[in-house]
Image 1: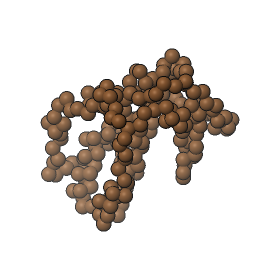
Image 2: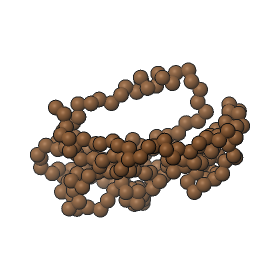
Image 3: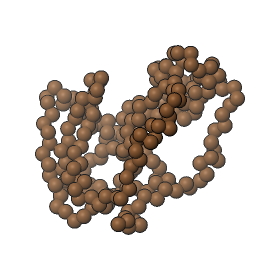
Image 4: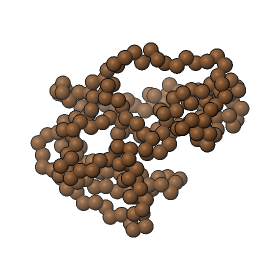
Length: 208
């Protein structure tokens, strides 16, 4: 069964995305640090450490990243959102239900300061917002691998049991990976996250 029209996310282009696309220079200038892509962050990419790229290719790489530096994020507060002119806010299609109230997993006293910082960063980034919601889901943190940082995890299993799911299925990762077989790569960027880029519609945010 297809979702009603008012629940579908419209994807539109208010203007031609290629109209103001920067032109690549034939002889790119040396890299210039910017407010987001600093010299320290650029050096950490190590794109010129193994001699794989020619000097002009390295300069072109730096130029492209410099021009599009705000498309990259190194911390929570730098993560952006899809603009509403291109994507509608998301509405959660729910069946009639009673709000749930799940117990939290206690935070160890030694991690309280780190957890408070996570919450403040998410509020500053617009991911979390103050509310007096009728719902309460289990919330806890886990340690990131090879790091002292913590990752916030929200148990959304209760919500999934009351949400009307779409019939679509995600693409198979193996099919995407196979297209890159035998190709060389000179750097790797972590995907910060694939969620939280869409803004939630007011009717799906229980603020009171």
